[in-house]
Image (cartoon, rainbow over the protein chains, first blue to last red):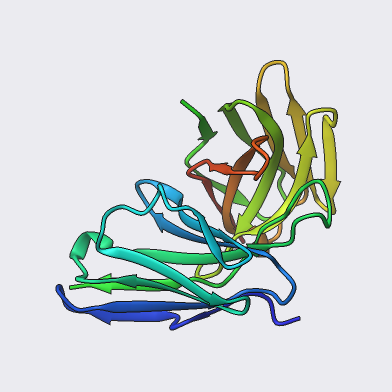
Length: 116
Length: 113
């Protein structure tokens, strides 16, 4: 299995531009998570999906952020318009319910976003 | 408020030496505690997962302990190697049906030759 795949790995953009981050979860996993990691705040959950349906988006910082999961193998996180304070590493993770009591989450390599 | 605190924030040790990282948590309802290793430029990878009834778990040279009474955990690394240089993140899972994770800010370990 290729693991969780994210693209792009690095993104540099100017303030005000739209940014789209992409994620392909592990095949067969029914949960997908989007996290943001900064030095100051560590890892924070932004939103998670179960069976392609958004369940909890309370971590999404503001209306500039949106996420979609049109099918079981693809999700996007969009920031429009982007701001310098959005600069962070964004991780996608997936897990499979029912496989164990731990529901272990597997993380992708992340997308490092820099907004100038 | 659910919180996970780790110490030290950073640590430098010589190759071959042992070290112990600490984690204190105030999380309820508790489900399990995980230690993740995060190499620079990569996503976190799970090292150990412990439930309430487990007080120690090993994964090679990594040994995690859990004291559910004092709400403390430690990660002990034996005979450190250069490849152990990474951030180590303590994560507590809430027992809320869906297992929401509460992350510590991590300990950055540098193993020096």
